[in-house]
Length: 253
Ligand SMILES: [Zn+2]
Image (tube, rainbow, N blue to C red; front, side, top):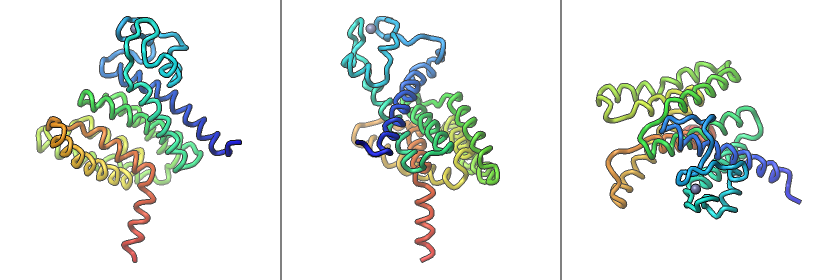
């Protein structure tokens, strides 16, 4: 018999797979301004309308050996990877935060951060709709923890205001408008401490990895910050609070 927690985590992982499947659709369609709900899923090569059994997260990809049922065109490995990644993010959130409404909000936010990362990586843009979704999550969370409202309101402007000043000074060359909005809505969702922590982690990771990429794989100078900021914010969501408690404890010694 599996322990009770393992069953729960498998269920949460399967939920994550399903959400990941939806986030796949969003990453494909949002940059092309296609409808996310009304257009049927179809094969990019032959136009074959996918049936429900072609759309089962992860399983369809495995059974069809990563190919279209009709024309056998190869499907991108991105589809199962994104589903597995979303499942993993969901399980991590519940491992660190336990079962609560807040965990549900963190799960949705982490899935959207993953979606933002993929889209920003490909297009250097963060669709405004995804930032609006994070804003809605932030407002719901604010309603749940309204006693600490000032932490979140300061969070909304803490990093974003600094970025906006850099944006104005550099005439939009140093930072993208989408990044500023992302930090504003995530600041509202996480509060200023976690927002600043996530921002610092994201910037350090972004600089180090991008310099390495420019050296090793001759990547362009242009840097999509979205994936790094998202990774930093996700890490902050998971362990930011614990890390800061530990760090402040060290300072007091
Ligand atoms: Zn096809």
